[in-house]
Image (cartoon, rainbow, N blue to C red):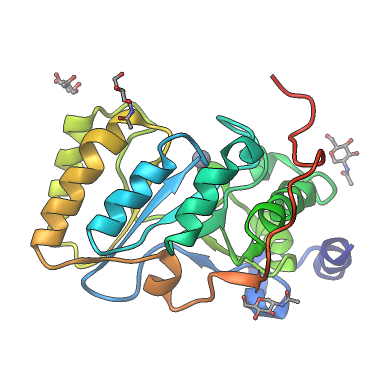
Length: 248
Ligand SMILES: *[C@@H]1O[C@H](CO)[C@@H](O)[C@H](O)[C@H]1NC(C)=O
Ligand SMILES: *[C@@H]1O[C@H](CO)[C@@H](O)[C@H](O)[C@H]1NC(C)=O
Ligand SMILES: *[C@@H]1O[C@H](CO)[C@@H](O)[C@H](O)[C@H]1NC(C)=O
Ligand SMILES: *[C@@H]1O[C@H](CO)[C@@H](O)[C@H](O)[C@H]1NC(C)=O
Ligand SMILES: [Zn+2]
C-alpha cells in the first residue's frame, strides 16, 4: 500500500530525487565499507547446510559476517531454521536477499513487495527480527526497486569485490582474486554460502591472509555504521504455517 502511494506520488520523477530510506522513499545503495582495515564478508543464497560451519570459522577468527538469505532458493528457509538461529545467535548479521531470488527489475509494484514481506515474515517467525538491509539478487536494481525497497524501510547493499564463486571461478582463482586485494584497505566481499569450496578452501584462506595483515572481519552494518534490523524481538513458535508452500 505504502509503496503504491509513493510510486504514484513520484511517478515520472525517476532518479531526480534522492531522499534516504529513512524517509520511506528511495532506498540508499551501499557498495563499499566506510572504515579502513575492515572487511565485511557476505554470504548469499542460504540459509544452507554450511551456515553453522561458516559461523564457527568466523567466530574462531574473532569476527563476524553477514548472511543475505532467501526464503526459498536452495532450500526452504524453515528447513534451515536451526542453522539460521545458530548464526544469528553468534552475532552474525542476517540481511534480506528476497523470498525467491527473482531479479527485482523484472517485477512491478504489485509483484515486488511480496518478495520482501514474505521473507520478513519468515525471519520474524524464526529469529524475531526484520532486516534493515537487502541485497537485490544479481545486484540488479532500478529506480522502481529502490522505491519499493525504500518503502519497506530498508537500504540496499551490493558489493565491491566478487569472489566469483557463483560465476565459474574455482577455489584457486577465487583465492588469487582475494590475494590481489591485500592492500585494498576495505572490502565488501560477495561469496555464496552454498558453495562447498568457498566454505572448505576459500574462506579459511581469506581469514588467514587478511587476519594476518591486521584486518578485522565485521558485519555489513558495522562497516557502514547503519542499523542491522528495523525490529528486534522474540521469535515465534514453530507451527504448521512454517513452510514454503508447495515446492519441489
Ligand atoms: C504486474 O505483473 C503481474 C505479473 O506479470 C501482472 O499480472 C500485473 O498486471 C502487473 N501489475 C501492474 C500494476 O502492472
Ligand atoms: C582453476 O581454473 C583455472 C582456470 O580455468 C585452471 O587453469 C585450473 O586448473 C583450475 N584449478 C583447479 C584446481 O581446478
Ligand atoms: C564438501 O564436499 C566434501 C566432499 O564432497 C564433503 O566431504 C564435505 O562435507 C562438503 N562440505 C563441507 C562444508 O565440508
Ligand atoms: C525504519 O528503520 C529504522 C532503522 O532501522 C528504525 O529505527 C525504524 O524504527 C524503522 N521504522 C519503521 C516504521 O519500521
Ligand atoms: Zn544471490
